[in-house]
Every structure is written in C-alpha cells, then in structure tokens.
Image (cartoon, rainbow, N blue to C red):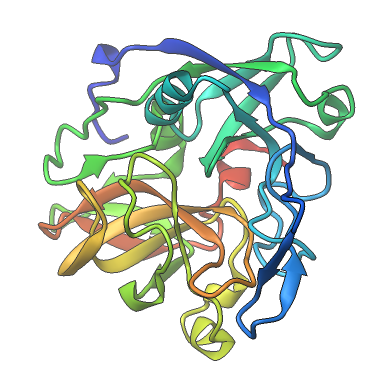
Length: 284
C-alpha cells in the first residue's frame, strides 16, 4: 500500500439526474473525410457498452458506457465535476431502482456511473443519482511530486501502486502513449473533462497498441505536463483512464481522463494487461 492522507479528506454528497440524449434539428456532423454523420452514443442509459468493452467498433460517437448524469444548474453541475473522482460510490435515490449501488467510472460532458445490467433495466431518464464524493485533496505522502487528479481513494487502494527499488511510484497501465496522438481537450483543465486520442491514423494507433484499448483501461501519456493544464513537456507523465468510446470526428477519439500527473520523474509506468477498472472493481 502507498501511504495517503485519506483520513483527512472530506466525503461529500452531490447529486444529479440521468440525462436525456439530445440532437439538433440538423443532426449531421462531418467525419474525418467530410461525410455527414448522425452521431449518437452520449448521455442517457447505454445498455450494451460497459467498462471492460472495447473503446472501438461501436456504431456511435463518444459512446458513454453505463449511465450518464448531469444537473440543470450549471454551478451544481460544475461542483459535481470537480468533486467527483473515479471509484466513488453512487446510489439511485429515486424511481424503481432506488437504493441500487454503482461506481463512478469516468467523467465526460457528464459523469459516468456503472450499474449492474439488472439495475439498468429499472432506471429511467430523470432518475436522481447521489454520489459520495471523495478524493479532492488526496495526496501520496511518499511521492510529493505526483499530483492526484481524479482518482478516488478506493481506486488508489485497488490499483496496485507500489514504490520501486529506485524510489519511484510504479503505476500499472495497459499501454504507454505518446503525447502527439492526443487531441481535443487540451484546452481544458485536468479536473474538468477528458482529452481525446486522435484516431484518424489507425496505423499510428496500432504502432503504440492504442487500437486495442478498452473502456476502463489505465494508460500512461508520456512527455506531458497535466498538473494545472494540459501541455507538452519532455519527461512529464500523466496517467489517464479511457472512459468513453471512439469518434469519427477529426481530432477526436476515445477519451482519456487524468488521474495522476508528475513532471519530476516520480512515476514509473509498468505494463499490466489487467490494469482496467473492470478488473479492479469486479464490474464484469
């Protein structure tokens, strides 16, 4: 176990509602070849895409696995985004599935929560979901150069983080990705929404093993400084979570949400094919 200040952090309730999918009256969006597509897959309740499934191959765009929740009050919605961390517990507070428990598995335009299939069948758009947020202010006491971004204490405890003989933090990941394949989302803060991989060049993805990524995979993005924004820096490393599916739009692809960041060489990525939320939380 890696030592943390878990006993000092605040656990706080936030809540939102299962959001409805939306489309404009003119729904076509151009793909990488300029062909108009009707892009679906965000918001609502997605029954057949779940953490552990491939990030690619869906006949949809930015597919959000499981349940997507938001709040109509923008201030409340922002608080949900900034306070919620991956691995936080959620429960249903209204409707036929009241009391059912789930796990926060990512953050996109909405928060993403995994529930068991039998719970999904009872949920409706508009049901209230409560999240017990924990993780804001979390620190790794023996690795002050590593900033914890959106990783909750339960995730850290199950991840298999460990000190190396050289004093670095060994972090299990399924792949190490170069900074130059990262695209949309560079303008956003690491605490609010993800950054997409650019997947227009499938040969480049295959070169780095990024074409085999699954929803829920943990990855290392090399030569990046994602401490207080998103930028390029040789030697920096951010550890991210693949939390939504692929996209046909230029500059977009599976989303990578920041969980850890450092620029001082404290992180040592260790390749582990089982480094996926489904494995850590027994979701499947």
